[in-house]
Image 1 (cartoon, helix red, strand yellow):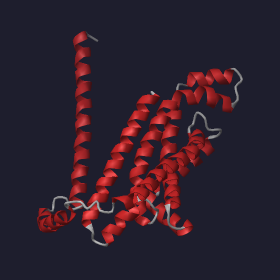
Image 2: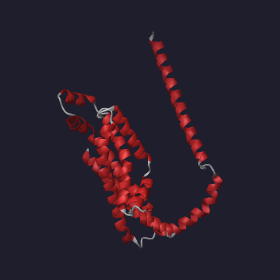
Image 3: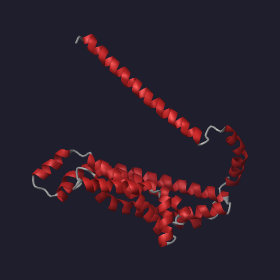
Image 4: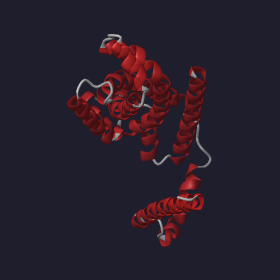
Length: 267
C-alpha cells in the first residue's frame, strides 16, 4: 500500500472514530434532556408560581439566627466523631473484603463473585435507610449513625479498594510467589505497597463524605447536628435553619481542608 493510501486509511478511521464519539455524545445529551423533561425541569410555569414561596422562605431565613450556637457545639462534635468512627469501621471491614473481591488476590473465583455481590448489595442501600433500621434496632444517638455509615461505606470503599488491588503490577506478585512466599506475605510485600497511596486517597475522601452524610443521618434520629436541623425545621425556625446550615458548611470546609492537608503530607 502506498503512503498516500495509508494516510487516507488513517484519516478515514479517525473520521469514523469522531462520528462514533459524536453519536455517543448526542445520545448522552438526548438521554439527559429526556430525564430533565420527565422530572419537570422545563415546566417554566411551575418555577414562576413558586417564586413568591421562595421569596418568603428567603425572607424568613435571612438573617441567620446564631442565638443557640452553644447548643450546637456538642452535636457538631458528635457529627465529627460519627464520621471518623464510621470511616475507621469501613476501612477495617473493607480491606479484607477487597482482597477477597480482587481476582488476583481472591482464593477462588466463586469467592470473588460472592464478595463482589455482597459489596454491590451494601452500597445499593442508602445510608438514610440503614440509619432508620439501626435507630429502630439500637435506639437514638450516634451509634446507629456510625453503623449506617460503616455498613454502606463497606460496599463503596471495598469496591474502590478491590479495583486498586486488581490493577497492581503483576510482576512483584509473581516474583514473590516464585520465591515461595505465602498468600499473606504476597499481600503484605507485593500488593499493599503498590496500592497504599490509592487506598489512602479513597479513605480520606470517604471521611470527607462521611461528615456530610452524618449531618443528614441526624434527621432520622441518628444523632449529630442533623437532629438540631430537623428540630428547627419542624418548629419553622428558618432563621435557625440557615444558621445551622452555615455552621455545617463551615465544618465541611474545615474537614475538606484537613483532608487535603493529609493527602499532601502522605504523598
